[in-house]
Length: 385
Image (cartoon, rainbow, N blue to C red; front, side):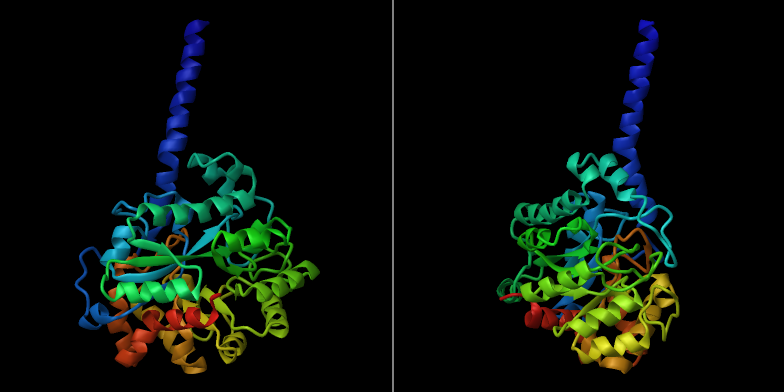
């Protein structure tokens, strides 16, 4: 009997080692892949001179990856941000994802991130509460900044962004990030939690992710409806606080209703455009033009579903289409790095965008805008002081 119990204990210990030590890294390596390897890519001269390379959407916080180590998998870490000369990255928080997600139809009955949180040995509260899960990721980014010896900063205001831009002129190794939420469901139905996330540094919120929630309909949900009454209250509260509204993943009805009841500029942090790549994931011309007229910002993705291709030229074609519709000053990169997808390349591959944008007919000045100048300028206009 003792031998049997010992065997059971050893089996459980072995299972725990695999679950906690192997499974999280396996999923990170297998889900965050690239089409093109870009280690030691020589940078174009224009790329080296760009004052502000930036991207609107990265899910790296989901993976509990060592931010300070140089990895041969995934898309983002501090050494690769510095190697690529990236000045700014929006770190977005994924708090709940249904099983077998797709771009057509998902319900909210399953939660893969709960299992991932447990496998990564995150605090037990994050296994059961999507609010705690999201706040834990917020705290992670601030902890990265504190441990970085000043190399990485979290941006929450125009003043902080301006100071960072000034300091980076004399130190190109400096990089920065800002927090966003991918789906307002992590408010757990309580609008009073909005202030808690604002205090944690969150500056933009995507109203929905892959499923309809208590606030609004998703483009990939079951009903794909518009704003609920609670959702309208949330939009009013966000506008009153100066929080940026992200319409990525929102249903067409939700986008219409948000446009109708808001006055401030809006973003779509990571998307494609139907005119260049027609599918349920991407933005219609009607909504592209409406957001452009409001001086909004469209982040074009670096993955196949967004741009119907697996290289920089595919993304450049979608950027060309969007810029022709709404102006080059309203288009940016929205990679979706580390979003459990295969991107064209990791963050070190961003220099490949320069020749692709030239082939798409953009001037060097326009390329500087697309590669980050537009994000910088948008935030300088729309972040709190």
